[in-house]
Image (cartoon, rainbow, N blue to C red; front, side, top):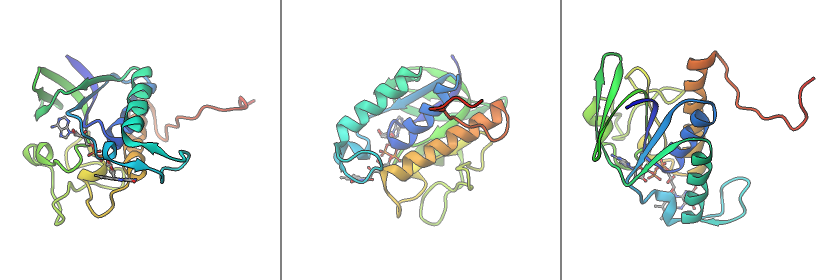
Length: 186
Ligand SMILES: Cc1cc2nc3c(=O)[nH]c(=O)nc-3n(C[C@H](O)[C@H](O)[C@H](O)COP(=O)(O)OP(=O)(O)OC[C@H]3O[C@@H](n4cnc5c(N)ncnc54)[C@H](O)[C@@H]3O)c2cc1C
């Protein structure tokens, strides 16, 4: 199956990337084995939300991305990502997919990135640039898997969003903005 964006990991980072790419017309699949870090938290430090239990936050986030067309493969593990003819073959516990973009958002599990050959830094995390690109073309990483010292849900979500915007800027033209105006511009 051909996919525009494959997101590996359905925590705050991965779902945030998927929200933007699916909302703006890219075929986006999220694979998630569950147990995201935030599902063990009571979030009271996420801007705009007074307080929410982690499992409710994840349920809401899943509903939101699915309402925009994200295909969520809950419980399906990604086993391997292999470069193939300028794209990537994604091998999962249930099948295979060909994807243009890969977003690695696997939390404390960095094996997929290591096996692909992503650069790993001295902290044992995936090395990324200022827009969360790895050393592989069209492969990004965000959230806990890129740093263990900073571990906040809103930061993971922000990095995921940045990736979504960078992918959309590549696809649709520079400086893509996902803005919905309250007062329509004249
Ligand atoms: C007990 C606890 C309390 C916390 N409290 C707070 C808090 O109050 N406020 C706050 O801001 N942050 C809190 N955090 C931190 C917050 O949870 C993390 O910053 C956030 O979860 C990071 O999101 P992530 O998307 O990077 O990774 P994760 O949430 O870890 O998500 C990664 C996902 O990837 C999936 N995955 C991994 N490998 C694969 C694979 N090969 N195939 C498919 N899926 C895969 C995992 O199953 C997981 O669902 C807390 C964390 C914990 C553990």
